[in-house]
Amino acid sequence: MSPEHHNELPQPRFGGLRLVWLVVGALALFAGTVGIVLPLLPTTPFVILAAFAFSKSSPRLHLYLAEHPRFGPMIADWSAHGAIAPLYKAMAVTMMAAAFGLSLWLQVPSRVLLLQALCMGGAAAFVLSRPNGPR
Image 1 (cartoon, rainbow, N blue to C red):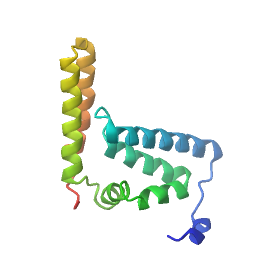
Image 2: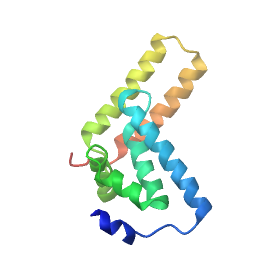
Image 3: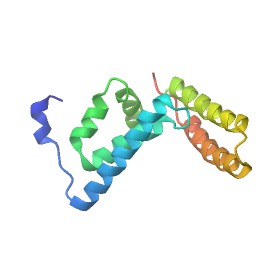
Image 4: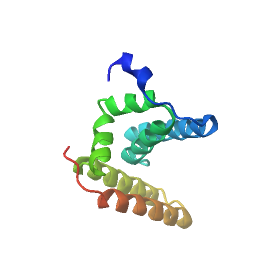
């Protein structure tokens, strides 16, 4: 969409709720961006959450994400099919396993390992249960 069409995008109506969605989107995008370099955070679910939150708060930020060269394909696959590409699935599960392995190697307390196993196991199950996207 060209810049002159941005003014035609619908604006959310509720000011306070719009701000909440904007903050959720910003935090999710930050976590997803950190997840690119830090194996503790899976990028794809956070970027999808950011796109959803921005669709509720800022059409311009949503459009920016949807057209972004790195994040746009993830969002398009999710929007069209609820899908995550096999490459992104493999990367997410590998990074979660690596983070858990690092925690084992660092001998973190058992309760932390259990919490990590539950959270990462749930996230991995969700990611792997999604249909395969075309990329």
